[in-house]
Image (cartoon, rainbow, N blue to C red):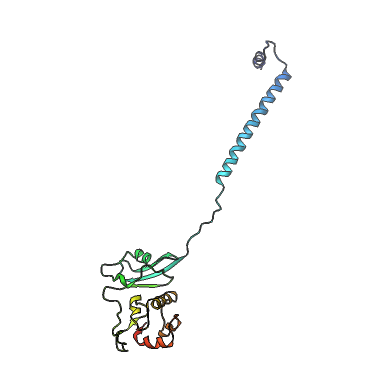
Length: 204
């Protein structure tokens, strides 16, 4: 310890050994300063670490899912899960697109699909056709399918225009298809008189 006393004495301008009490005071001050500096540095590091590992409380929103069954002239028929609000074009894309034989005009790619719906893509020339509609038709003529007909085919029915045909398709989509012919009476714009005029020209 003698050499330390000498060094401190030289540092303050003297050559005489310094008092032991003075040495203890100086040493205590130095130790206290070092302790405080280390404490501040450690505290800052711990605060930064805590801030860095704080979990995010942002909620993750996932769109609702629907299931659609697509059959017919697509490359991969089957049941597909899509986001709610998907369009028919999304269904066809999920199913690998149309085959070379598909009648693309038999489906409306722009319409929104619903959960549990079945989509049928017909082969060219295979879509149901209405025979004799222009002349009034008859029970023996080929009938149009309420659940598979395109809008243009529904418009061929007597008394059915573009707006009414669109409402028929909307009702079919919203209710999972027509279960009986009388369901037509639930479509806005179809009354008893119109129903009587077309019931023999349609089938399910």
